[in-house]
Length: 81
Image 1: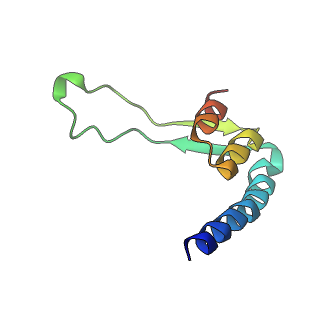
Image 2: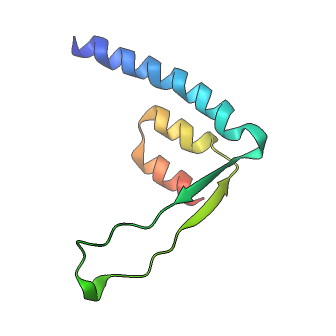
């Protein structure tokens, strides 16, 4: 049963990846909103002012490819490029 579940998830992830690439790259990119981290549990002296910001990401290929492969390191690297 675990092998069937793993195979299903792998195929599903690849199918979703194709859809995501078309959707996210369509129209020249996608605007992503980044909301500040909730710092209510952070000691007052270590809290920072974090403001809302947005980015327009134009190249999703590396991000989606690393997500499809399950490669967390490559995914982190793709976000910072």
